[in-house]
Image (cartoon, rainbow, N blue to C red; front, side, top):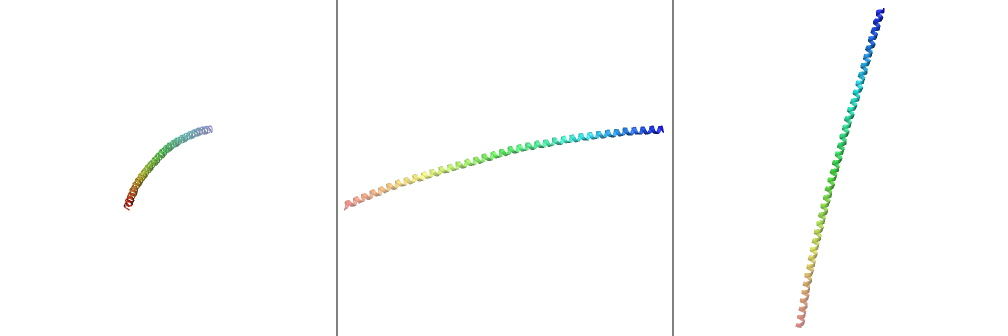
Length: 135
C-alpha cells in the first residue's frame, strides 16, 4: 500500500510538473502572439503613414501644377487682350488717317470749285462788260 501510495504521489507530482510546463508554454505562446500582434500593428501604422505622406506630396504637387496652369492661362488671356487693344488702336488710327485724307480731299475739291466759280463769275462779268460795250 505504501508503495502504491508513493507511486500515486510520484505520478501526481509528475502530472503537476507537466501541468506547470503546459501552463508555462501557453504563457510563452500568448506572449509571442501579443508581440506579433503589436509588431503587425506597428507595420500597418508605418504603411498608413507612408501612404498619407505620399498623398500629401501628390496633393501639394497637384496644387502647384494647378497654380502654374492658372498663371499660364492668365498670362495668355492678358496677351490676347493686349494684342486686341493694339489691333483696335491700329484700326482707329487708320480710320482717323483715312477720314483726315477724305477731309483734305473735300477741302481741296471745294477750293478748286470756288476757283472755278470765281473764274466763271469773272468770265460772266467780262461777257457782260463786252455786251454792255457792244450795246
